[in-house]
Length: 109
Image 1 (cartoon, rainbow, N blue to C red):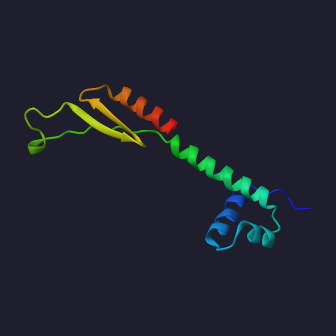
Image 2 (cartoon, rainbow, N blue to C red; image 1 turned 90 degrees about the vertical axis):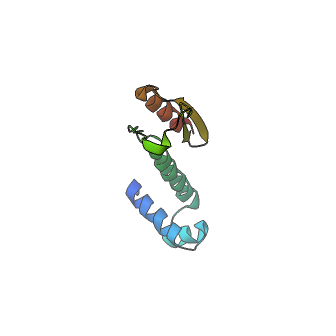
Image 3 (tube, helix red, strand yellow; image 1 turned 60 degrees about the vertical axis):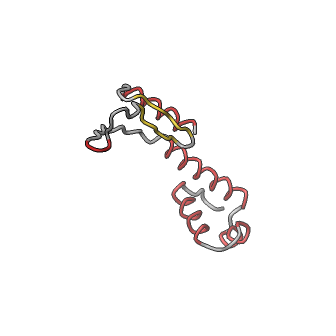
């Protein structure tokens, strides 16, 4: 009886599959893997990677604009795009608030 594979072993198998030009059925047959189980692990590892990417912390850094970029009558708004959402944030808005807002949006997009 085949012992259970670890997450790392599944990740290695899926990596090998993605580098191959074979179908799931052909690849699984050659490795003695049930295609349904293989597909589940492939989905599971993608979901984990996707949620890890979404949960990365947002870092806001201070930006100073000087010289010709600052002009009289320039709008007091910064435009920020998070995934497919465009935000217009007033200059001087609390950085902690913007960070929380961006983090929340990234978690939902």
